[in-house]
Length: 234
Image (cartoon, rainbow, N blue to C red):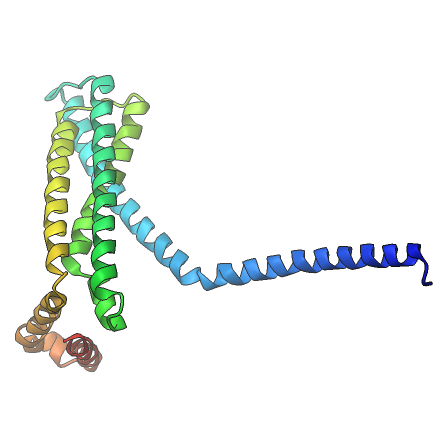
């Protein structure tokens, strides 16, 4: 039992058992990690679906209107081979703008909000104006992808789509300008109070004077929680 063969076999079996246990541990730990990030994945899926639906609806309206005018002979179709690069360039610019904005926000957050209370850092991330601007940029990217797909299947594109794309490209640039200015303004932490003041003012001056809401116990509770949250931030 104490021979060389015994110890070699014993070591080999121990190595095999260890590797099996290591594999089981990696599987269990990986599964646990996946469950820990479940709320993040749910939010990504929810926000992605929302933006995709919005982009598809807008694209459907524009393409439907465009198709109607082309079918009636009111407008003539444009050359898809010329229009497609314009859409590709717009999507690329929108992606670049979104990346620059995220980099800018990350810098401001790391210098001003990294050690702030959670409610303050959350208020920075959920700033309403910035979220609207970012949502507009993402909507444009989805819109551009849908239109690009339409050109790839040789759909007849007319000036309705061309003008809509051009106008929205300008809107994306303006949105980045507004979002960028707002982000720089939020480098002053007290600017976080802008949204809180706006929400409190709207509740006190408008919602509480609307009998349909103010006399309902459920809405009263909602107003109380919303007010407490904003006062806590202030």
